[in-house]
Image 1: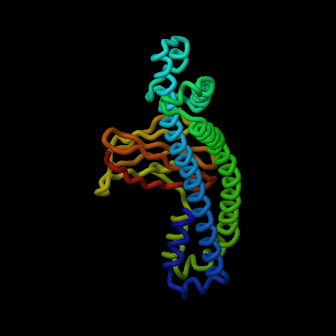
Image 2: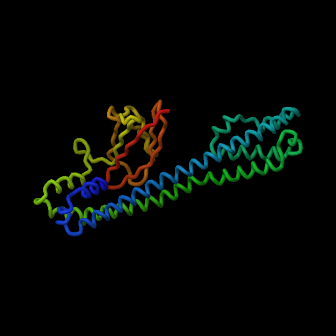
Image 3: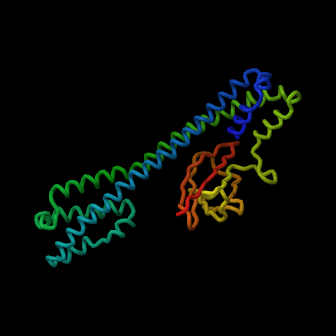
Length: 289
């Protein structure tokens, strides 16, 4: 709604805007609010995406490094008929990849411990003190990165506070200044007045107030039906209609995370803001697998 009001008023004849003292300044201030809201929202998305990508890259390196080390230790166990040692390091690569972060931390600790205990015998298998130290450093780095997404959540909470401040500024500007100034042209420029008022409304079909609307299209910008959407923390599963859309009447204020999925398309995870008296419209383009 903020953007609709700002975009429309910027297109109005300056002579009409000039009839409303300080309206031009109010339009500029509203646009600054919108730009700040957009910047904070984009920063949230990019920060969390970066945290996840860095952590995932480090995890993959840990999985591959410790799978090699595991193979070296297990080879020693098999060749020396050390059944106890063999059983302690019997993990497949797929098992490592499917482990939770906590379980991977424990498992790599066991592998490293057994490798250090048998270092002298592992030299002929390619394991050295230097390679074990490198593995330990990599594991330590990964453990530290396990906390990064939690840090991102903390940053998200702070940025959500900033978003609320910007939304409050925009609400105050509209309600106390712009909604009053527009009355001046109610009769002299009725079309401008009516369009402004329509843009200030958040009304959906049948007069239902909406908090969130989604429009999903493919690469050819054609609507996609039956896209499944799940909002984090919400037990409801939403699906797009034949028009590639769905809407939600009410959501808690703040930042939310929604996942879109359907066979044949890449899964997308997007963050979006919800604030009081503001409808959020989300346009999504699904990429084929």
